[in-house]
Length: 135
Image: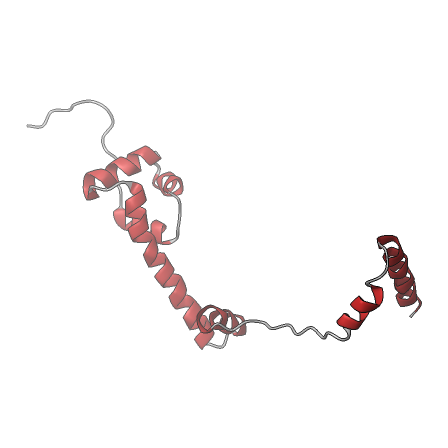
């Protein structure tokens, strides 16, 4: 006959729930709070059952959440979500937003102002700004 050693009875942990919460990238503290236990208790139970600490256990289980998220992203793209199509194109196809900048005559302007002192250059910039304001 088993004798009562005292203390609280062990709270049961549903590891399927723990795995799902890891897949959602919940922290150990969040998972423990959800289960109504202390983080140290969660860590100890994982060590008892799987012979690894929470950190190592979490690394193995969180990958399932990434797979699920990736699947949903591809499904969104396949169903015509333009934003997701663009994002996946950038991530996997090396596509990017390209902005073209028109450049005209910069070298000539540089040569024109090269001889000016800092103070003269400042005055010329103010004069050009005033011309822009008038337009």
